[in-house]
Image (cartoon, rainbow, N blue to C red):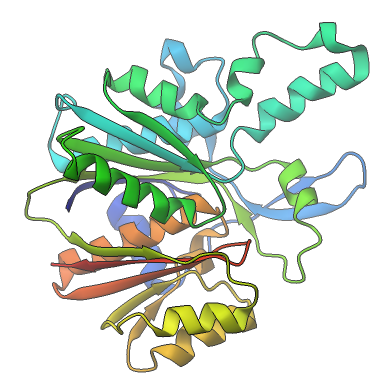
Amino acid sequence: MTILGLGWVTPLGRDLANVWAAIRAGEAAPIAQLESPFTGHAFPVHRVDSTTVEDAARQPRLRRSSLISHFAVAAALDALRDSGLQPAPERLGLVFATTNGGVIYTRRFFEGVAKSGTHAGSPLLFPETVYNAPASHIAAALGITGEVETLVNDATAGIDALALAANLLATGACDHCLVVAAEEADWAICEGYATWKTRPVFAEGACALLLGGDGLGPALAEISRSAPLPSPAHVRTWLAALPPEPLVVSSGMGDPRLDAIFTGLWPESTHLAPKLTLGEAFATSALTQVACAALALRENPGRALVAVTGLHGQAAAAQLEL
């Protein structure tokens, strides 16, 4: 299964080359502040500038949709453009992954219900509260009539989406498959995760990979995931069973417990942690890790290991080669 095209929407823009250069240099994206109107707490967040996805936002179907759908559609279109397959190929499948979904419209919808009663639930907002709203917008924008799936989980959903796409391709359900992950930032997300012992800088954006059975790009050699693991020690044991690769793209982000695991397990490998530049975007961060590994292999063919840890004691990994 080959990665034929890449696309992402990040707080540093959409250009693959420029964002990739910033990640390799360890540059941090600009930080904005989101404030909770209830507690007054202010949270640092890496936001996507609205002009970054204005082409997607102008599409009639997306004029009333939430930011997460703008990000997802833009990344999907860029992945097709990067692959050179335009218009979208026939028998194209889609797997969408997210952790928090369309939280902005969900919060607005239930605010109206809470303040004024169930009759105040907006029919304009409600369709955007469901987790598969971004997938429906991508499918409509690209004319996808085949398999369309949505996965919801912690960061490991990004790897799960790759595994599902591989299965769809292997069984002949589609000839190509888009894997897209997206998140949007809102103060409600930040408030909800405020009990973390380590509070990362949250982020929004999207990442998309176009997969096919043949091609000249990096190939996904293996995908594996754990059952829920109860502690960092168990996460370490599971990850230690993975073969070391020259490049390790990890989900470390300043959490000493996890960062020590990654660097301790593979001391001879080159380590890359995109979250240090782009922030914590959950399932999107996991897919971004895979995109970074693919970009690295485009420049220097070889093998790479993507290691992902989730919030619920889960871990997942993908191995790439070119």
